[in-house]
Amino acid sequence: MKNYTITVNGNVYDVTVEEGAGGAAPAARAAAPAPKAPAAPAKKASAGAGSIKIEAGAAGKVLRIDASVGQAVKKGDAVITLESMKMEIPMVAPSDGTVASIDVAAGDSVEAGRVLATLN
Image (cartoon, rainbow, N blue to C red; front, side, top):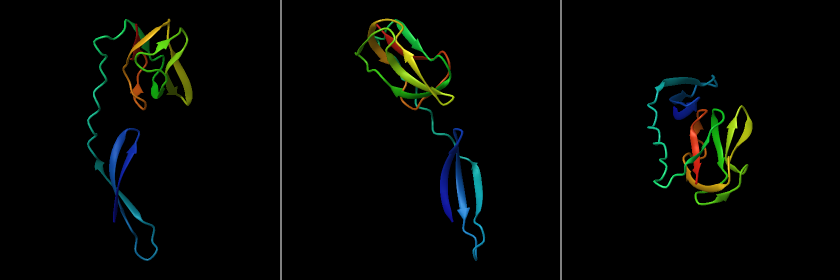
């Protein structure tokens, strides 16, 4: 018998696979879904967070962080790239400024309208 932990659509399952005797196909038995690990608390903006918000234009997953806190950006520069429906969507600076906070991490799932970063 072998035990595996499998994640499907965000649900975590503990699965036990039994080896069949005499070449029979192995049988898999899924246990009840394992309790999800507590979600990491959302990163809080620092006290110096900026007043210009960069919000998710669509629900998706944070593919990468393109800028860092303290970095100067120009209007139209990509700050964060989301992946939604197999497309990469850059979330760009709406104006010139300095990145004050990055409020998500690569791999985070976000809903449309969520604040991803702020600028000063």
